[in-house]
Amino acid sequence: MKYPFLISIPHGGVEVPVEVANRIALSYQELHWYCDPATRELFNFGRSVEATIDTPVSRMVIDLNRPPLPLPPKDPDGIIKVRTIDGRDVYLPGQLPDLPFIHRLMMKWYFPYHQRIDELIDRYPVRIAFDCHSMLPYGSAEQSDAGKRRPLICLGNYGDRNGRVKPGSITTCPADWIVRLADAFREEFPGADNVAINTPFSGGFISNAHYWRKGIPWIQIEVNRTLYERCGTPTRLPEVMEEQIPALRNRIWPVLARFWDGIAAAAPFDGGESMGSYE
Image (cartoon, rainbow, N blue to C red; front, side, top):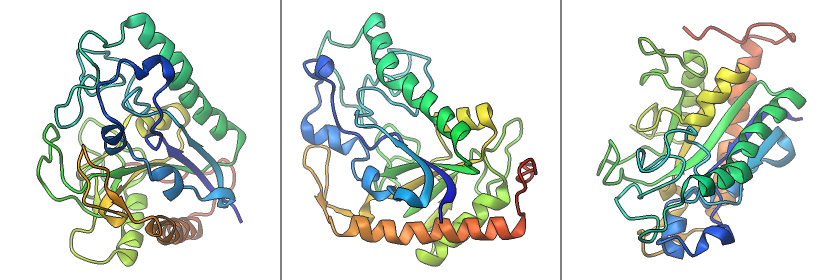
């Protein structure tokens, strides 16, 4: 049985294209630290889902989960990074890409990823999409939760801590959907504050933009890297507990399946039927 899911994994790549390699100031270890290198395996549910999209390129070269504007130096953590989340320079002095170079990177990596998402939604019977990430165990220096311990699982729909719409905004899925998913994760990861909604992350450009474009509900999933890594720093690769990645995937998948089974049972779909209220 296939579930009507689209799985997006935009930060799992660690490759640096050859045309950028001599510009980057970050080491091999840092490039891995600031990406989500386990997520391409962690969220690979194979033929159990309708569609999956990922990328080999590092987010430190081009961040697919950022809006196409503004460009550097106005946004140092935008589509083209100027510095990392803890203040390290991404590029060597004088090597920040200029506008024509940025345009080539976007044409090669950025726009095809987003076009492919739309194509997958059009081609397959996708009812919900998940944008899948990992997160460091504590907030970094330039983040809003600097130094704070993070939950094991964070789910985002651009709403408040209960998944409800904030004044003057939207959510990318109904509040009761994200609450149901959070409850399902709490069954698998019991404990106070192990599962949070919209804290510390409420969603990124991918879930927001493609909800607007296609109307398909989106939920961003962030998994704490402590579930499969130990003792990492930006300059020292963490000890990856390789056996934990498939084991963790085998814990996450039943949560998603159980969540959707409950949604489908509560509100069966018949083609044009509404998928729920977003208010």
